[in-house]
Amino acid sequence: MKKYWLLLGLLWITGSVQARVIVVDPNGDVPTITLAINMATPGDTVKILPGIYEEQIELDKDIIVMGSGYENTILTGPFDPVVNMTAGVLQWVRITSLSGSGVFLKGGVLRNVVIQNCAKNGVYMESADADILNSVIVYNGWHGIWLQDESTVNVINSIVRDNGRRDIDSPGLGGVGRIFLSHVFAGSWRVGQGSAINTFNKDPQFRGRYDFRLSGNSPAIDAGNPSILDPDGSISDIGYFGGPHAPTFPVVTRLELIPLEDGGVRVKAYGRANF
Image (cartoon, rainbow, N blue to C red; front, side, top):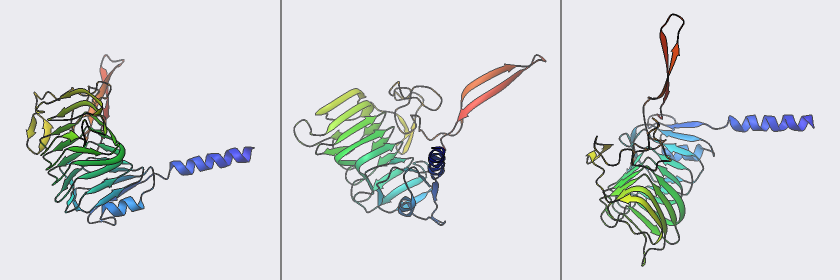
């Protein structure tokens, strides 16, 4: 019996140290996102360094693929779509398709991404079950989010506006897709099956057309789902810079004052960073 316990312990230790971070560097040993995804196994993280990546990406594993911010990591090209996604997490990137849709989403999680200026749809879904969190989907030629068949999507704390057709929609009378919106800013949407909770046609007041930071008086600040917090512990902002996975530099989340014997005070700060 002791030998079996030892074997199980060794297997657990081996599994826990296998998760890796694979760095995509245009000038390094792993120059493409596709190569990094092919190398990755479930649990790994693919970190994409700044650059413009013209490649069609297949994300079909339970891995995290993270860019270096929408300002720095751009996935683009004459592809329809740029990203085929059935599993995993994609975050901190900007996606633009020059000839088609940005993401063909059949599963997984899009979080803290910007999808803009795609020739067709920002996100196209077919027979899918997926989540879109704290993202910005704007200025696409057709729909922001388009659901086909019996797809289900949860759109939370996101901004979907100023797309060429309806911002969130599914075909047919009343829609056939199940759409669940929570704390979303959208210009137009149609929920045939599902629900829309605290969803508004409001201007989020970005700092610029392509600067998706929120201005100081934006109605999207601290307006997200109250159960989802920003890194500083406040209620999540709606959009790219909100939520627990917002791309932030270190922020102080708690201060602890420790009295000293000489009458002084020592300040101990706790912080968090996502980069």
